[in-house]
Length: 288
Ligand SMILES: [Zn+2]
Image 1 (cartoon, helix red, strand yellow):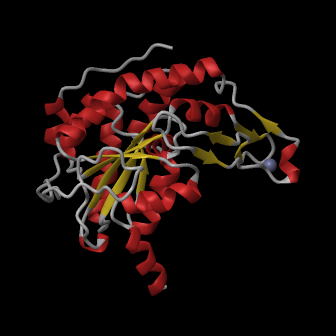
Image 2: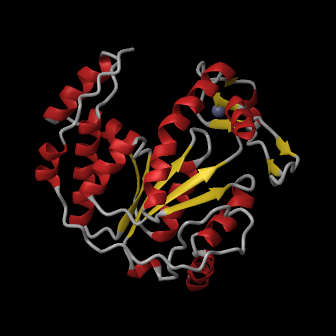
Image 3: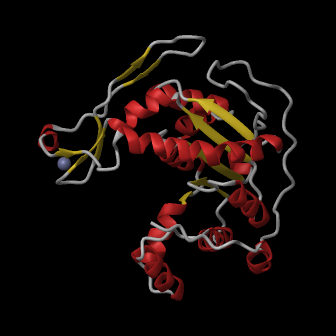
């Protein structure tokens, strides 16, 4: 599978799609939070501002399988901003009938990778449409994956926070190998029951399996690329490219690293705490 990634000339699209940089980066509050053991190294702490009053322009980073789509989606619902996954943008474009979709279909049909240029083009269109429609921000998922993409994104819009979700690699591996899909209804499940003891200063991690209902149980299949070798290779590729991306945001004081303490029930409240949103959910439910 040949990866044809055209080298990007930033000037070509920047002139096309440069958005006004809405706000200057908010000065990072110096108070490092020590409340939560899960927040291992917080380079910045988001200011405690009502999310309604600020632009939420966040990116979510994290290894495949860490669950960033799940958390990004939950946060976007909570904060009332769209969860923009670049994979979805590509799929949406493919199902449309624009000149770009024709070009995109050819690329995908030939098994080639969609270039940065096309992704950033789709993303810019989506962000511009959101701005026109009065969206108060976004949570990006699946982009940027490389420093090059992070630089491009910086030219296109202002990012005020990069949330890096982390799980130890042995937990991630178990989780990925536990994935099952119902052959009939297409729903995703996970048969892995994770119970890692806390060792060497690392916290214990428990994650309950996501078991199928009885009518799906006999129809479970495993994706052919969820083998140990392929999953490990996915991690290796991810780590290679992601570390410089993390460094990119760390150097700009925008990175929050969050070690997931377990599954959604354990992680969600801690994540809200780390993002200074813990009282936001209470206020939301009180107002409901
Ligand atoms: Zn089913």
